[in-house]
Each structure stands twice: as C-alpha cells, then as structure tokens.
Length: 322
Length: 292
Ligand SMILES: Cc1ncc(C[n+]2csc(CCOP(=O)(O)OP(=O)(O)O)c2C)c(N)n1
Image (cartoon, rainbow over all chains, first blue to last red; front, side, top):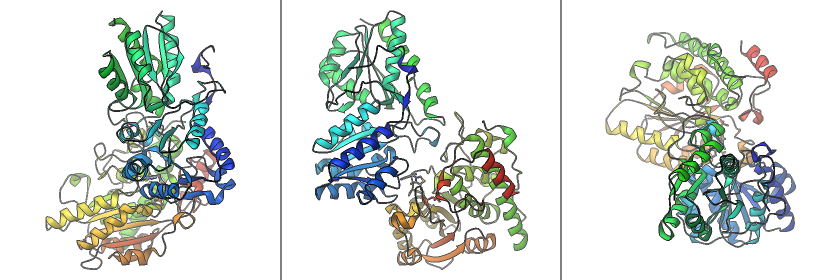
C-alpha cells in the first residue's frame, strides 16, 4: 500500500494538497446536491474559484467573519446541507472556537471544517497566521474527529470519508508541497494508524506535512543500522491507541513529529496513551513557542522537524534505550 | 532576488517644527508619502512578498498621522502620554515599518531584514520587537477593540492623549468591530478616531460583491459615531480632520477615508489582483517610474 520502495521520498515530485481538495470537493458536490462550501473571503486562498464557477449558488461567502461562518454552517447543516467550511486554519479554529464547540460539536451538527494552510505554512506571516494550536484546541472538545492528511491522496480519501460519514470533522489541508506517501488505492480508515515503514528499534509517529520527513529520517537511520518503524497517524482523534501501545512495547521509544505545538497535539495524545497503558520514552517534536520570522521550511528545520532533526531525536532514544 | 541594504534608500524625514504652516505640513506629508511608497515598493519587490495594494491605499493616511498629527517621536515612543496609533489591518506591516523608518523610529537599514529569518520585521507587526508598534495585529477585527480599551484608559487617566486606529473596509465585516463601536459610544470616547481605509476591495473581490458594508456612514452614525468622509489620498483633508479631536464632543469619530488599493500606480490602482501580488521586474520599473 505504501510507497517506500522508491529511491528516496525526499526526491519525489511535490504536490499542493489544496488541488486534491478542490478536485475532490467538486466531484462530491457533483454527486450530492447537499454539499455546499462556506468561506470567509477565502475563495482564492482555498483555491475554490473553479468550484464557485461550477456551483455559483453553493459557495457561500460570508465575508471576513469566521464566527458567522461557522454558525451559518451549523444552520446549513440543520437545514439538511452538508457544509464544507473552507478557511485558513488559524482563523477558522481560533476565531470561531466557541461556534465549533457549541454549534458544531456539542450540537453534533454535520459540519466539515477544513483548515486550510495549517501549521506554519504561512511562514513569514508570523504566529498570528500560524495554525499550530488547532489540533490541541480541537482535541480538547468532545465529538470532533480530527484528521491530518499527509499527501494529496490522503487528503482526497479523507474528504470522501468525511462527506459519507455523519457528524463533525476537522481536516487539515496543507498548501506546503509534499511528495506522495500513499499509492492511489489508499483508503482512509478513521482511527487507524498505517505502518508506512516497518521497524523494531524505534518508532516515529507522524502525520501531515511532516510524515514524508519522518520517512526520510528512517532512510537515514537505516544506513546507520537503526530500524525505524514509521507510523502514519492521520487520525489524531480518535487515536489508534493499540498501534501506539504496540510501538511502546516493541521499540526503544517513540518520537512524535508534527506541524503543531508540543503541548496537546499528536504528541500529547501519544504521551497520554503511553503513560496510561505502557509507560515508555516519548520525544515530542513540534513548536514549543511563538515562532520567529522565517519561511515555513526554515521554521520546520529550526524546530527539529527536518529529516535530520527527526533522525537525531530517534537516535537519542535508541542510544539511551532498552 | 534578495532584499539587501542597498535597497534601503529611504531618507529619514522626521517632523517639521510645530509652528510650520499648513502648506509646509502638507508638502512635508506629500514628500514622506512618496518616499514611503518608493521604499515599500522595493521591500515587496526584493523580499518577494507583501501586501502592496493595501499598503498603497493606507500610506497617505500613515504619512499624515506620523508626519503631522500624532504627538509621538522616537524619544517619546514609550511615554505613557503619547498618542496611540493602532494599525488594525496588520497585513500592511510593510507600510507601517517604512513609515516608522521615515520618521526615525526604526533604523532605515533594518528595513533590509523585512521577512528574513529572525527579523523583527515580520509579515505582521509585533510590538515586542519593533518600537512604535502598539498591537500585534494580523487577524482582522482586533485593532478597534484595543483602541477602545486604550481610549478608555486615557479617559480614566483624565488624559488628553488621543487614540487612532486604522481599519480596512473588508475588515469591518468582523463583528468585533461593531461590538467595540457600541462600547466606544456608550463610554463617549470622543478622543478616539477610527479611520476606515475605504478602498472598496478586500482579499478576493469588492466588498460590495462579498458582504456589502453600505450604507456605511449611516451604520456608523447609528452606532453613535460622528461620521466624516474624506479623500484618503488628499493630505490636506486628512490633516484637517485627523487634527480635529474631538470632532464632536461626546462622540467618537469615524473617518471614512475614500481610497484606492494600489494608488497611484496605473496598473495596480483599484485592481483586486494586487492584494498580495508581487511586482515583477518590469512592473517594478514601471511603478518606480510612475512614483518618481
Ligand atoms: C480574522 C481574519 N480573517 C481572514 C484574514 C485574511 N485576510 C487578510 S487581509 C484580508 C482582506 C482584508 O480586506 P480589507 O480589510 O479591506 O483590507 P485592504 O483591502 O485594505 O488590504 C483577509 C481576508 C485575516 N487576516 N484575519
């Protein structure tokens, strides 16, 4: 299922997941008249111009008003529509957090929240535009499934799954270009980790734009004779606790690597699981502070989310391990 | 292409003596606005990013405020009694940094670090890094509530200091602005001036097509503001209205500054594509020619 037999994941062609997002959304909308888009002056940044052309009255632009946007989406769902809210993840999750909690999660409305350009994708635009807290915030809210796709194939698969399943979902859609990690027959399964590379010395659990970097780290470690298990964890909530516990039991420790804060994200979810079920060493990579000025690539490298940084963290666990 | 100190060519203009005539003030503001536009163009072109359309619609307002209105100088940048200017449409940080440099708050050479790794000059302003910045804006709809809070603190201090906040017109679609406006009028904050950069464009389209604001003057008046409309590129009109505080005793002021995004560049003006487009070499040369 996975594509690890290629020379190096780092040398593969790169894709902007927003392209898979709009293409899939248009197919879904074509097949199901209930599907509508809801945006906040974010037609261009969500790449939805073609969607607007195809379905002019099914793209609702409330203007620069995120609280309104999520409230309106909840009402649309109440009326039988399936709204895909499409907005920069930072404003969608921060500004409309109470609407997400009360109108979407607590009310259990069929709203699909699509957080565009999450993580540090906005680079130089700074911490106001970085969306690294979104996963932690939404994890704290009951009833939202949280999905962080790693490539265009997983983005499309997760979107199709979301359209077909009832209830609140949050999906991150990255603008940062990534290589394909999955093959075309990939099928998204909620709450299931995917072993994208097997290994028994140490485990890296990752998702989103960082997953290919974790695979590249594993390639490097293999050259040193370290066998790395790479678990793709597209669903942060509900977490695949069995896969996490198995990794804790079978390898020297777990590195989590994600484009998110180090408190309360995938790393937090893994740590909570390990501590309660099978205490093991966990090294959490992510952003521990408001990032300084810099491009997305610069910031990922700076905070250890480069292949070298992830390999360093894994190596440390192996050196001091079992 | 990289931005270097060679591209930081802005002359430091500073302020005219207080007794200067209105004509002298207007000429000074005009020169500042021109130099700020030239420098900002270089920042965006060589850094390869920025929001030049919104920068250019706001620069005459910024030049007027810093050039002749605000009671603030590099020496008083931390003085509790300084006037406050809050840039709510934080995406035009490049215009703010350039203005601050033109009036001596920021070394001109530092402009060459715009958007570079670890630079204080982020894509959105950071008050903890840049002297003269009052609020860390970027998410729209934050500046006006902060301005109301500052105006309230001045009122509690029985101080004469004034508060100005510049908001985008698209930005006014955020409900937080209207909540803050109700509070401003409730507390009769007549030393608060809200300036709307009324360029009628937002990120992806016109405000009218997106979520129309009109009738904006009537709305602001209904929210308890004294409303004034000016040509936001006319330094004399801006100087007169921004200097008149309070404009109507007992009421906060709402200045609708009619502007054009990208003004005065022929191919940028009033063109939504220039929200965050970066001029290529030919466009850069053309814009520079039009400005000089
Ligand atoms: C809360 C929030 N939502 C969305 C954005 C993205 N955004 C940045 S600028 C902009 C358009 C702003 O339009 P306007 O206020 O009219 O500014 P101007 O056209 O003068 O640049 C948008 C939607 C944002 N910065 N903050």
